[in-house]
Amino acid sequence: MKIMAVDLGDARTGLAICDRTEFLASPLGVIEDYSFGNTMKKVAAAAEEYGAQEIVVGHPKNMDGSEGERAQKCEKFAMMLQQIVSIPVTLWDERSTTVMAHNYLTENNIHGKKRKEMVDEVAATIILESYLSYRKNQKEKEQKKEQE
Image 1: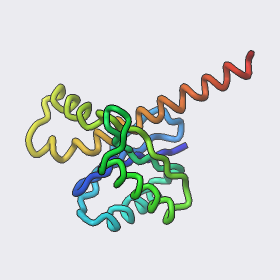
Image 2: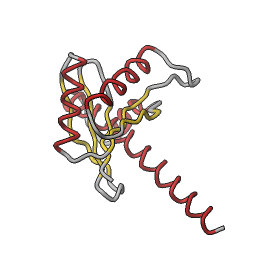
Image 3: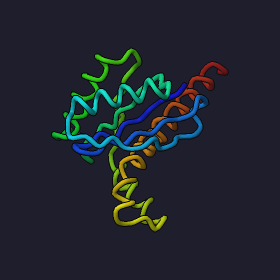
């Protein structure tokens, strides 16, 4: 199943998508828009264009599991997005993904303007990889139970 991930930002929103086998997550790019509504419409259009069958929206909880203003904004985004698309929209815990994205870019010696352009789509890719790993583990657990 093709799944698209969203790393929602105030001005820049990163997108990533996986292949049908859910093996490879790839960055799609960044939506640059300060408008919440415009960003939502562009995400919906991208999901349709790339044939996504599910959208995963990063849910940035605090390290203690509580929800701050940013997490609530992502919840609102996911809820409103669900109203305009016909595929499932799932919130996915994205704690530390932006830090991981910055570390990845540092390790690959990507700095300056290029780094700023890439960090959001790298974060979306990390969110998607985490979600795909979870789905794979769930399938394996189900298969084990069936064999018992």
